[in-house]
Image (cartoon, rainbow, N blue to C red):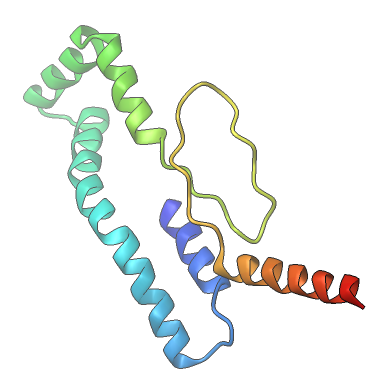
Length: 128
């Protein structure tokens, strides 16, 4: 889901739509997500083993993690996993609710340009 939102944000920022701009947006997306995906993949693999594992060793591991692992470690891992919450830049941003920290996302280049142009137009209109 995160990848879909980030890809949508990069595609939204493309203006004008040319082949070079699309290539640049996809390269930025890859640069932004590739390391995070490499870090997340082993964790996802282990989580799947914990939840869906059928062998005896996987059952033992599941029992240890869910019954003996301290809650503080579980909460620490959950806080780390849920800190990155990208939102679609072309929709109104959802305010932060709750107590967990959130990693801020990069604002939309397109929206920033539109705000700058609106501010310039406003200054020009007041100067007249």
